[in-house]
Amino acid sequence: MPVNLMEIRTRTVSANDYLSNLEEPFNEKFLTRKQTYQLNREAISQLRAFAGKYVIIAFSAGWCTDCAVNVPVLALINEAAGLEVRVFGGLKKDPLGQGHKWRIPPSPQEVETFNVEKIPLIILADTDGREIGRIVENPSHQPTLEQEISEIIKSK
Image (cartoon, rainbow, N blue to C red; front, side, top):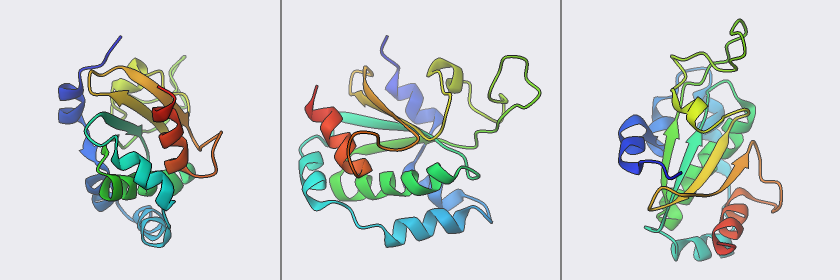
């Protein structure tokens, strides 16, 4: 079932706003990754053709090592290719929750809607809100995140 992208936009922040608002000590890892990562130019060139046709929705937390690796790359993809990236941040585990992985709040209720098990969860949706693919934690089929996103979109 498609998601309401207008509602998602009101409940999330852009990738760059997410990075700018991370608190210490977490922000240093995220910002260093963004400053030092080199995007795959071919993948970015391919992704430019899809700007305005797809939206990336990510779930993240400052304490998450894989988020510190991948969410800054999403910000770079947004800047270089123009793909919209929206982030649900502040996820917290609920070690005492009976059958619940995430503590809501502060984790957004969408962790249940999207069945978030591991983060970062990166969801690719078309502009109608239909999910076309997802990446859990790290790319699994391509060497870089931008290449994996490009492959998912091209396969649809």
